[in-house]
Image (cartoon, rainbow, N blue to C red; front, top):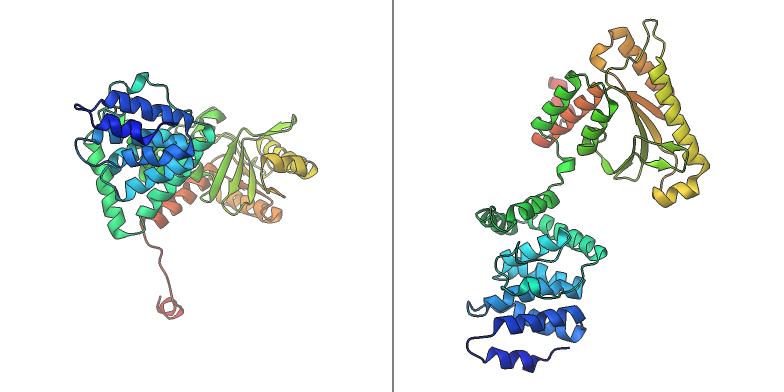
Amino acid sequence: MISRSEIDSLLQERPIPVGKIVALLAKAARLAEPTNFDLVNEVAHMNDTFDQPLAYPAMALLPAWGVRGIDALIRMVSDRPHRANALGILGTIAMGHIPSGDDMSFLPENWNTLPKYDLPADLVQKVRYRLRAFMLEQLTDTYKKSRFLNLLSNAMYFSEKDGVAKRLNFLFDMLIDTHMVINQNILQQFSLLLDNCPDREEVLHRFLVDHPVLLDPFVGVLYTKHELGDDFITDFIIRRINNEYIVVEIERSTHKLFTKKGILTASLNTAIGQVRDFQAWLSDNIAYAQTKLPKIQRPDGLVIIGRRKDLAPEMERRLDEENFSRRGHIRIVTYDDLLEQAKTVYRNMAERPLVMKSKEQKRL
């Protein structure tokens, strides 16, 4: 434990021995005794220009006290003069490492040589959760939104220095999950990929991993290449935000769905059989499955194969009848269906949905 009198005594010296004080603060952080939190937090709140060389390293040491220190930093982002630095420290911790002099130019010269605190993985996850919750809260109020966006835009001026650009990208990804974004560029990339007729299923698999919203607009968790015991490996398992599950088997976009006689092709039959096997295994091993896939019960199945544009009208009707007969328990869709679904999601994001009243419908 370090004492307040030690710090006060050093603060009386001129010039202030910043290196000595920071070394003491780092020692306090290594020990992380509750009695020292208030002292380090007080130093972190110093606001005079003369004291800032001490405030910044003290801020970077607050996470040593776990959630208590993280919450103190979040409060500083909300209403304190050092808010930009506090956000930078939180972003660095959320990226999984303790701030260093390489990514924080405001830290003292002796910072990198000092032994500091450990950063457990569970704390990183808690930081991410709290930081994301804080950022989303800023978007619910006009004043908060303006201040927060101004904070980010000011940081952009220094984006080429000290790893700031990487941290900013990370923060933006926390604010807007890019894996759940649909935009014209992604739609065009997917369309172009399909038109290029990839000869390997893995190419399509990677694109869907990068953009899981193409598989399902309500995906909460996407499990890829998930093992079912020692028996099967699925292409995907989707856990939707309402905790419904869908097991997914994908085939190449160049595969046919039906023969000329309207009979299911071998490729489609094999994919349907795979999904049935997955569903049967999950039903037979439900207790074990739930340890890996929380709350899973009887998942629906999805087979993705071929292109709808390659289907003659009678074969499109044949596909619709096939899906109707299965009552959704195993649904067969083409890659064009995924693309059209994504386009609809994008339109609903970009435009306000039309709300119709009965009287208005009669006038149409």
